[in-house]
Image 1 (spheres, helix red, strand yellow):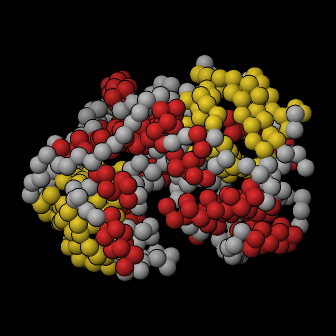
Image 2 (cartoon, rainbow, N blue to C red):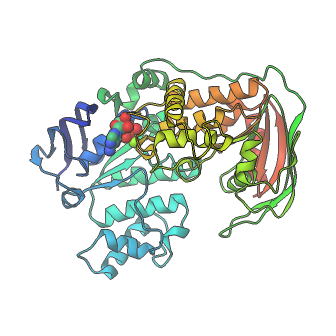
Length: 496
Ligand code: ADP
Ligand code: MG
């Protein structure tokens, strides 16, 4: 059984952009090796080379010291290398078994199914092979992706930002699973930009920045401060800043109901108000109505009763999403690819869409393309969107954090009166997360009413002027900042 996989001096360019510059990286069985770096540092590119998706321009891959050639993912699989990608590659219309079998062709499906059941049991969860994959939750889909590569016999397991899409609790469970895999003799690469995951759950840490390897170290020699400095090249510490001035009630939700979907609870009569110049933090355990609340405010969920009043516009419950946007409601959705950006369209198209609606570019028929491009370039600059090689580049090529910054640039361009942000820093690195928080505070400071929905209590406490706790589809408690963390935590679980 081979026990070490190494990438030796690998370089990779896209056009004339050097994404990797002579990077060395290795992992051995029994260890969890964390690969840390900001969005765009080159982590995914490096891992795509390790799993045979990209060929390096220079350098090579070795297993136990011998060079191996990986011309595609199949070669990697036959060498025991399996990667769970940042964006899942499951077929939603297929069942769990069909997805497993698709990835493990050349073996009877019944055998694949039995092996998957066995592995799932070892890892401590139940697997329903007949379930349609599209109906699984994110964490379940991720476990299926992991099972997929394990069933194929992977002993080198690459997880690309696996916790970016998970709640705190789900992430905790995943860390336990990862440790179990390493203890059983697998080599695990944990790609992440979360300091605590690297510090608490890895045996070795490699830090990348700008396509280069900056450091390789042990978690025991590191702390959050040192690690941040390595990752971003500077120290970033965020502290709470109270609102300079809170005004009148600007948004009021009364008895808002939304039916639940897929066995989940919806909203069962939600009441709260947000004043201008205030950040209202909505805390809660994932799955207690957060998605429904965000979607009903944006106008994409079915509201069966109640009202959403916005000062000066009355009840907006019946307004289309476009109409809400035009009266000054901006949103940073949790799923930026699904609701935020059109991945196949250019960066300029994605940025300009709100301006097109408002007629800023001369309407659909005499679209001022040059103006749209110019303003896009300025926004990209102002919001520090990195990795943009021309405004004609497909938005889907941006890394997660930079895609998020593009959504924010667009949403904040028109100085919205009401801002709805759902887990705005999820999936972002420290610097990008701090930049997003700064934008939210700036919107508040110029008088916007900001609603922050987040399952990350740190984020809630860092930003909120007032905190509401959403549990079982209702706002069950409210706290003025500075609130007691224990009290908020208790309210979060009291009604489950
Ligand atoms: P990370 O995973 O650390 O966030 P990536 O490896 O995804 O970073 O990206 C590194 C850089 O390479 C980014 O600037 C990204 O835009 C660029 N890049 C990645 N894949 C491609 C591609 N297929 N074509 C062009 N540029 C790419
Ligand atoms: Mg990546």
